[in-house]
Length: 396
Ligand SMILES: *Cc1c(COP(=O)(O)O)cnc(C)c1O
Image 1 (tube, rainbow, N blue to C red):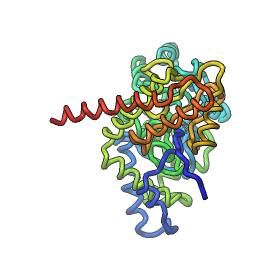
Image 2: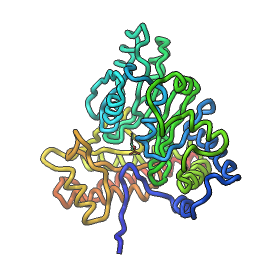
Image 3: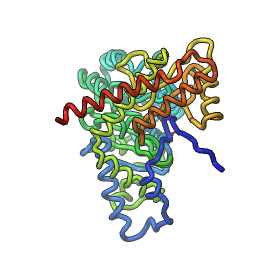
Image 4: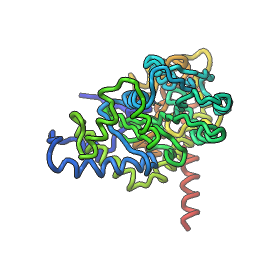
């Protein structure tokens, strides 16, 4: 018998039953004459998730990392100078990719737990009078530390000095879960994947591209093949793909987009915020700290929780998994052993969040952390209860 597992990692996330049923399909002909009737509206509707009307979206059979690579190889040239910052495992990995692809990376190292250093970016952009910096990178939601950064502020820093650099955003663990406004924030390349806010299996790397970035893809000289945007655009214009698309995942994407739009994106974001606030109340009641150093950086999709000195977060994770079938996110790289993470994105509800808190406090109690059983759950319940009463008061 396979055991019930309770999945609270920040991706892959839990799949709604309707999405699971939507991908349980026989294989179909991806060159069928009516396939474009399915593909064209799908790509069009996907734009809403990025809040773009002027940009174009591209869907690759890959994970989010492939969409990172597509963004970089299509729009930049070897030796181009780019401005990046590193404050967690995902921002680190994108820096590493850019270095390996031959870019001249100016990387600002920031303590893990903080976000994009907007003031440093502004200073460097202002000093760059000859516009050597071709692109500025933002990891919107650093999943390793539970830190959400201010993308709009980076756009303001660019505009303040009329800097023409492209704005790249990793939105893998934010897009479709927290506010993201591609057009309004002047984002040129936004990246996401299917297995987080979109509540699908891993396997789609999704990219939204501004007209300015697409123009650069014509002049950029970096080698690209599988991830060639031009080739993809030509095929997509006919309603097809240049190679075999992941048809079942695309059918699932149709279903998840319909779910998101029936709930309403604003309500989806409000739900993520409410649940994250409840989880944070619980963590506070445990007497534990978040890895995120300040409230302005609190992520509504993942909480990275520091264990007290003298304890190993991996003991909590192991206990939760082996004894209770609860998957918590591990601390990655620099914060390994120091944090465990609760993912609260995608298909997530108050009751699910309470069960994650209950399981985590049980596991912490078992391995001897000084945490009062029930304390986190009670604090979150009080928060959820109060927020429901508030909603009712507004309704009357
Ligand atoms: C999950 C994640 C990625 C990597 O995506 P894969 O789908 O695993 O390739 C990149 N950036 C962030 C912020 C993520 O959370």
